[in-house]
Image (cartoon, rainbow, N blue to C red; front, side):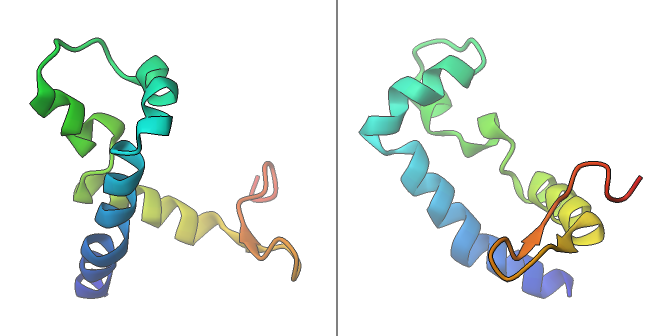
Length: 85
């Protein structure tokens, strides 16, 4: 299972975040959420600033996979506030 998650991360998650983070239209939006960094271009392209490292992805994956519910055919699999309380 770990190998499948790692493969998904490299095939889907990394390219998706890379595309989002390099989209000029999103740079202004993302700059409001970005931690205060110098003008270093390496810091601007580091996806770990947004918590998308493989260990962070695994953590988020485990939270969603253990707490998500099938809501209905429109919403699909979703996290529902207070549903697992």
